[in-house]
Length: 53
Length: 218
Image 1 (cartoon, rainbow over the protein chains, first blue to last red):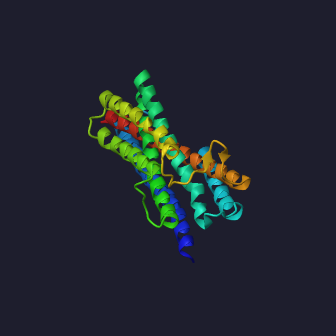
Image 2 (cartoon, each protein chain N blue to C red):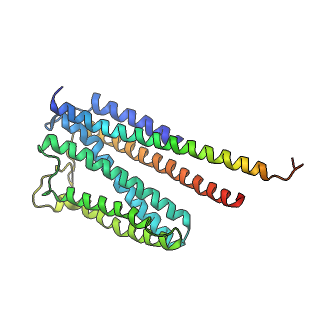
Image 3 (cartoon, rainbow over the protein chains, first blue to last red):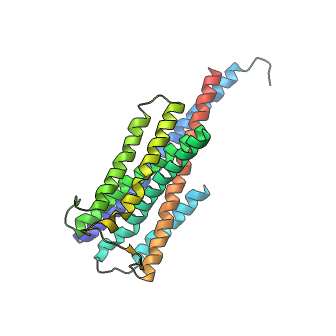
C-alpha cells in the first residue's frame, strides 16, 4: 500500500468513523429517552386515583 | 426514516462511483478525497446558512421552535466544518506535503468561520435559557453567515492560488463522469446532513416534551 493510498483510506475512514460515532451517540440518547418515558409512565400510573380504569 | 434511508443509499452509490466509475486524473488517487471533501464543506455551509435563516425567522416571529432549529443547524454545520478541516488537511498532506497552508486565504477564512460558529456554543450556554438567549444566539448566527460568501469567494480573490480551482465561470474543470460522481456525492452528503439534522431535532424536541411532562407530574 502506497502512502497516497493510506492517506485516501484515512480520509474515508475519518468520515465513516464520524458517522459511526454519531449513530452510537443517537442510539445512547434513544435508550436514555426510552428509560425516561418508562419512568414517567410509572410515575403517572402511581398518581392515577384508585379505582380509575 | 425516509431521509436516513435515502442518505444511506446515496452514500453507498457515491462510494461505488468514486472507486469504480470516476477516472483517476493528474492529481492521482488523492483526487478521490475531493469527492467527499467538497460536498462536506458545502454541507457545512448549508448548516450555517440554515442556522442563520432559522435565527432570522426566530427574530421575526419569536417562535422558540425556530431557535431550536437554528441551534441544531449550526451544530450540524460545526460537525461538518470539522470534517472539512480534517479531510482537507489529509488531502493537503499528500498534495502539498504539509497539513496546513497559512498562505491560503480560503483555508484560513474557513477556519475563522468554523471557530466563529464554535464560539456560538460558548455564547449560547453561557446564558440562561429563555428569549434573551434565543435572540442573542439568532443574531450571532446571522452575523456568521456573512463570512460564508467571503469564504466561498476567497479562492477567486486570492492573489496566490494555492487551493485548486475546480469550479470556474467556464464550468466545472473535470470530465463528465467525474462531475456526475461529484453530484451524487454532493446529494449523498446533503442527505446525510439533512437526516442527521432531522434526527437530532426530533431527539431535542422529545427531550423538551419529556421535561415538560416531568414538571407536570412532579
